Image: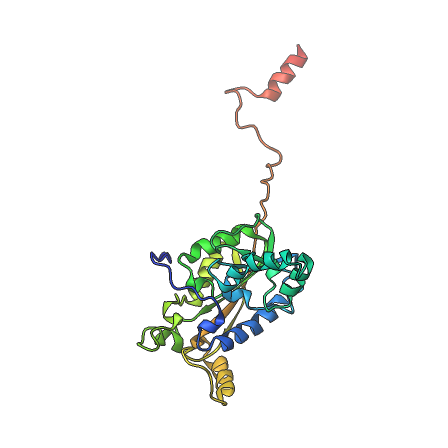
Length: 285
């Protein structure tokens, strides 16, 4: 299997606003993730990366969501306690009010963790669900992130992964001299087949896959008839969508003990004699 490690890490997006059609991508991915999240039950759900943190799974039965973002992310920098400590010191807000104030924002900062996706600060078998919204497309080593997810996820836990499709108009435009400053030029663009192969090697079962957005993603969507075209392409040309979303479930095969064979026959006996005959002879004496 070809290694996905890259010596030079790609530029990392701090928000969906870094993409020209970021809001459309986020809304399309969120719609699919909401449907998937309805079937994920448990106690803890982790969203890895800046893009995942901006997707609120309102329909999820799991109430405790953890947003893990890198420190250089705008929300990671907001976790710096300078402003918060100044407000508390000036008696402007109490710690409880500060938590309530943070929970009113788009991202619940009270449940935010600053760290890298390839080094998760969670115990083994402790997270019931994961969301990786295009996180692997901007990872230096996506295998390392998936191995960490496999270590932390519970038995029969779920993972939702979205990614950019190289077999699309966006994948072609990536290699064209179009908007060279666009961060999409740095995206990895892994195929869904390759992504599913990685998941299956780690013991995940692919539950469902959906294709969304049929455009270059390098320009904002302004055409009014785009919705009808999107529906047509999704029905007849799903393989050329710009974004795919995969739902996978962790499968753990239990170990079964090997039952011993019954009525074992002796493999050794004296040459020219029988144990039964010897016993009869001794009784006659």
